[in-house]
Image 1 (tube, rainbow, N blue to C red):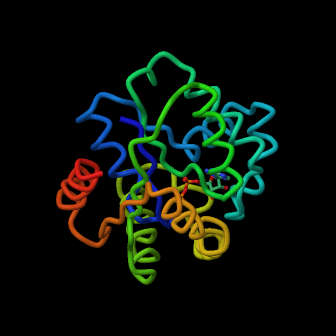
Image 2 (image 1 turned 90 degrees about the horizontal axis):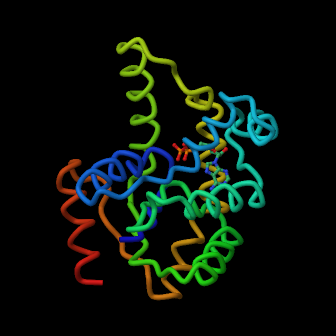
Length: 194
Ligand code: ADP
């Protein structure tokens, strides 16, 4: 199964990707996680990405396209993968389409998680509280200012992807406000009827 999870920051893409990963035995490819790992490792990509990520902006298409293309070639992606946080711009979607074609792969669907905007800020705030309570490290971009910027970037650059994938006939919309299990069930349902 090859799947894209689309939706604003805080929509639950990561949460759903983890559940689907376990159920289907395929990896979650989160460009956010991959970029955070690059930052932590102090690699060249990490150095280029850190400031823009902390502020809530988007890393260049060129960098993320390259990371994803290389990741898809790894052995654990042979039976499929769940893209979480990629593509995030129309040029990324076009690049993905080109790389899949080149690799002889096909997407099974694009799931758009729809969530009310006020809920997103609350979810980010509760994620921060839970992380602190658990003694973990809060993400550098989980603060009100960067979150606002992430939402703006989403509206301006990522939301148009819904139309893009509606155009290709691949878009499946799911209500991301339902409880976690119901959202998972709905994702599986829309993919079956695809
Ligand atoms: P979110 O919770 O906002 O969905 P992610 O963990 O997916 O967060 O991404 C965190 C940050 O990593 C983004 O704000 C952006 O700076 C960078 N990033 C992740 N994926 C991409 C991408 N596909 N294109 C550009 N930047 C990305």
